[in-house]
Image (cartoon, rainbow over all chains, first blue to last red; front, side):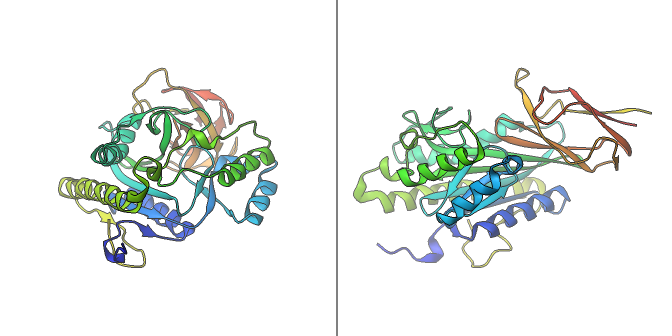
Length: 257
Length: 78
């Protein structure tokens, strides 16, 4: 079945454009120009590393070798560790203004980010929970896991502003389980950086492996539409409570979340 | 007058949770302006920006990769 582009809830972007969109929206929120922003997006194959890795002596060589293999390396502002990007991955960026002393704190922000993901999984008959998964890339306590495997990874960035913080939250969702080639690229990058860490493909699971194979595309679209509906409701609620909000603004095309 | 540069108290709930200093964006002895981004700390894959609480000269008290908790003093501004 061919899905009209206008109904696809995911924006296809160049990774650099997506990262620039996030940086611009966070700056706008911190400047008091917006109260929230939402983007559901996907991009070309690449590796994304937190900026702290760029200080490692082997980082330049690791980047060169990854780029030569078709995986250019970009730096990002949120915390965490090295992640792959590409067609089998969909990202959810959710940003908001947090008034000083008010909820949510870090833990609540992760729950707010992952709630629509867990609800969409539940709607598809898949139960999920939070947890660390040894061997998963960019492992963390607030992964969304299914049967002990990592389905989504999460990260945040908080920026102080007058009267509170501008908060960027990000989830990386696996539509397809990373293949051995992707995992080999990640492991070689770590070796080149001198980091003693091994990623295992079996620590992850993609949506297509959680549903019947002949229903994969339909299930993925339904899953992502559910998330889009949930975050749109969240954004609208945020808009009515605090003022201006934005979804997918300042981007080419016209299919908002 | 000396002003402490502190890890904020209200960013996360778990008192036992430890953060790591991932970056100093101003040098020891540098003149900094109130509100300028001077450091970053990370906890639970969350990057927190630390801004200067006053104008003055920064003295770095904790180094990159040092472990810190809520409320810890990581530097001073005089």
